[in-house]
Image (cartoon, rainbow, N blue to C red):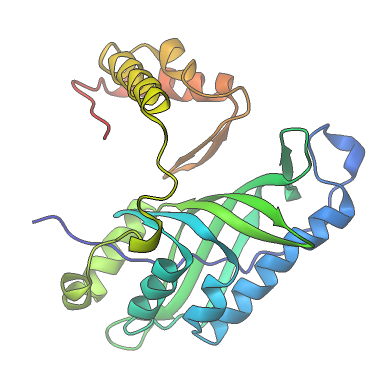
Length: 259
């Protein structure tokens, strides 16, 4: 039986606003401050254990990728945290923003990305404090004068997984799996040609994995792609290629599948 894992992502992250000239794609100070306001709002929502306030920081059709699958839509994200707060009561949050910077995507100035670490501390089964942690990656989008999260993905470190299963086995067994918001499931489906191209790319990625070809694997990513692993975030096609090259020296995947 597959264990269901539900974890609250800690986003109480402090950082210094970057110097704009340091990197070409780093957000300017005003944009960085506007996006940073999301972190403050998320932290406040977690402190109050308020699922509605937490979900309000996401777009209506946001995608929230958890270790047990994606959740689609603001309403589904709110339900996820409603279920989570019934048994997990975090009291302290921490983490960091990689490079102390938000990075702009494209040229329109309406999208940005960031990566980092997260941690939550809350009471274990006997009331003792336990800390769980992992890594995250976000994509933000401008909506009018505000910024919201369009896509977020997080993972949990292996030692944290063991800690969660040790302290909350009954709660995990009773928690429903991740679901998409029914209202958003069909409205934005890709056209058949785009879908066919996507599956062709997925097939190529699987073949590269099965052939243990780090260069071919990395070629499936954009030049500035972000790859979230349980050991941290890997940014850029070249870094992803190195990561898979190092991985192949320690283990060789026999088969791969993506759906």
